[in-house]
Image (cartoon, rainbow, N blue to C red; front, side, top):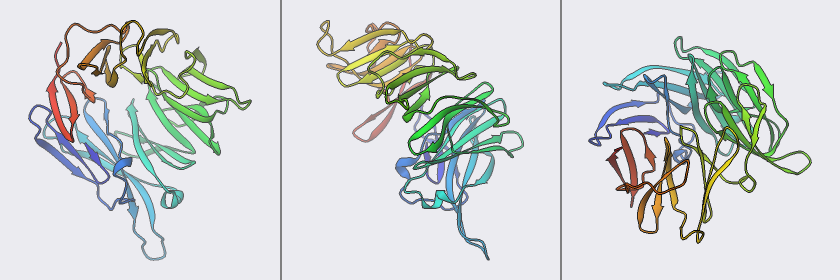
Length: 328
């Protein structure tokens, strides 16, 4: 679990804290608790967590801001393995809200992105030497995959362009047309989704190939403002008001829809999606659905987890966080 000033490793079986690492500096913003994003796993061996810190004024040098990226071992004893810092542009000190995210790591490069208003910057950091490989001003990185980092390149206010960069060097591979009020998210290891409006005002909601930027498919209509979650297998699940929709990210095909009142069913409140299963709260408690078909799974879960993996599900109830062992 991450906070603006540190990382805590918790054993899901016992609830005990088994490791801690603190940022070496003062947090950039004292009210940044809600802007803290989760750490990412890099290569299965390390967890990467970035922190926004101040750089104190010294001599003739004015105060500034920086990112400290901290790596913690994913196995016992869960100690810090390395850390590095990168200085931020001046706008990071004056923006009303600034967020930092470790977007991902692949092939020896970790990507960190910082966003404040219409400003953004992303960095590629070598996970072996811990040196800065590249910097891209204006880039809000969204997804890291084999050989490519994709994101939104900010220029004109609220009208960024989708772009793909070489992961190792930061050089631009492709750039798409500008999209007003753009929304971008990962839709699989080789697919990204971008939605918004074209310069002529028409709506767009597309699935693109991350390596080339070429169109894979259009999303089904009516989902442009709906956030969809990739299940880490082969399905996008899109919950919205009184309905849940599933889409094949490779083809854009609508797989199934559950709408309140249709077919004698009620759409559940989706809490998590993982490896072919949709977890949520139905009319009579926790439910689990098959992500490809939308059918109710025969084994009813004990709880509706907010986070789930092969080992455990985390449930938040009345402010209390509880871990349940995963089964089946």
